[in-house]
Length: 101
Image (tube, rainbow, N blue to C red; front, top):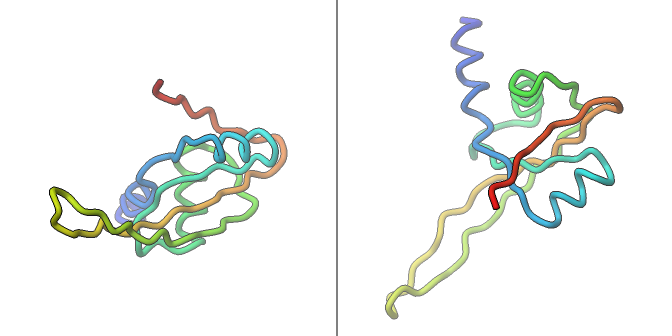
């Protein structure tokens, strides 16, 4: 059962969000932004980040991002919504995220 739980934790974090805002947050407040699965909870996100990056998490804030309405060749459509997590690390810990430029 512990192995299955670890597999779930490895699938919770989908990837980092590397933007100007997230870079500013990381430098100023040791806060990192991740895209997570829609049904993830705060304790699950905390355990997943601690497991994947070998750090200690201070707190987690989550935000549901609504999908945008877009039109492709005049046909209206909607992009899917997603969830992001703001993860603050305890002092002395850091995550090195490599941005693709």
